[in-house]
Length: 180
Image 1 (cartoon, rainbow, N blue to C red):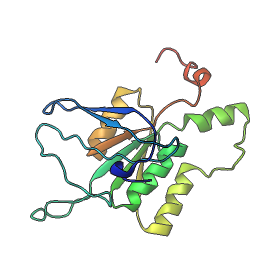
Image 2: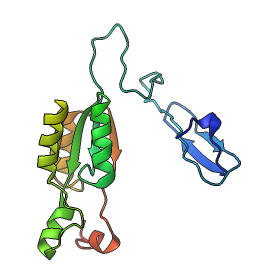
Image 3: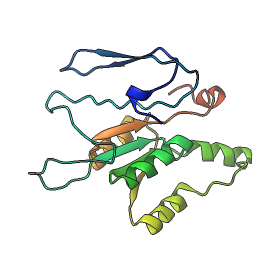
Image 4: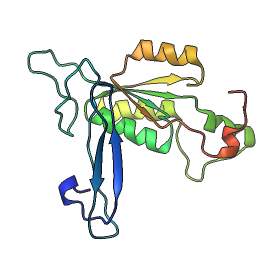
C-alpha cells in the first residue's frame, strides 16, 4: 500500500465521513494508472472528544493518563476478514473481543459439509493465539439480531470501537430464518 499523496491509481473515489459535531467532508482520489493499492486513514470523533491524532502503530494515550489499551469489538470474528482483523488489532496492542454466532459452522455440520481447507474451531485458534503471543481475545457467542445478547455484550466488553464483518455468506443462507 502507498500513502494517499502517492496513490498512482486512476480512480475517482468519494469518501463521505460525518459525525454529529463535524460537517460532512468529501475526499476525492485521482491518479493515472489502473491498478494500485491505496490506504486512506480517517477518523471521526464523538461530540465529547477531540479528533484523535494517532499513528497506525496502535492505540496511544495522553501522557498524563495511565495507559489503557483501546477496546475493539469485531463482529463476525470467526470469518475470513474478521479473524485476520482481530489478530491484527490484538497484535497492535488493542484489547479485542470477537462476537459471532458461529452459524456457518452450524450449517456446515447440518449439511455434512467440510471446508476445502480445514479450519480449526474459534476456541482452538484463540488458544493458539494466546500460546503464541501471550495475548487474549475475548469471545462472545450469540446472535447480534438478539437485542438482549448484543446489549449485554456491549455492557460487558465496553468497546471504544466496533468493526462489523457479521453477515451470512450468501443470500439463501440469509433467508433461512425470515422472521428476523
